[in-house]
Length: 309
Figure 1: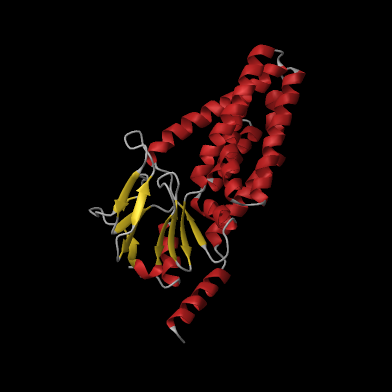
Figure 2: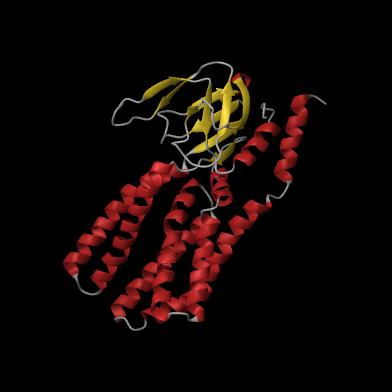
């Protein structure tokens, strides 16, 4: 049996083995999200019962609408679904926090908070992100989600909190007959949501990809254009050492990085910055990337016949 045939057989066998961590993450997210509606709905209703009827109705419709959109995203995984569910799911924790603040240590409130926390943990896991990303893959390619660059984490958190506050307060002000303030905030939330949604989605479209021809870095947050390294030019792949001199294409991101060493010196162009609005061209001998699950990438790369070690 030839080497290429052995590699192909190894890849086929690996694809047939149940990936339990990913399966648990995907179904854990689905089940906890369903239970959140079944068991947490009563707690939310109790928290709203002292409010005006218009406020109750508005909040209930909005919560069910958001829950339904997230449920569809969980059932039909994709890169877009990943952006949607990761934008909505943390809001469940905010709602659960409000419920607990209103009801204290009531069992229903605690259950609601626990389910919201579990669902959010599942959808932000690397395994869940991997499943959604791979569901959008084309042909014989294997996508690996890249970790978000550290400098983006705080702006993402702040912008999401602002979006969440506007999305909640705008409709509730309208329900309370505060027409001017409610209209202004609701309109701002719609514009802000469209603006942020497109930028959040860029984070879900950052991939390290294994294809039959080699390795691809699809990351338009860090690179001007996709970087492609042919299999014949890859000298080695492994975990990066602390003192490596490889070009950092991680963002930078925390955690373990993968170093891809090359036999030639291809050109990659870093994304534009304020100092260099046209981007920065680099001739590289090795690059660093930061997939959320580096071990999985290395195992798949080895199965495809790439030099790992």
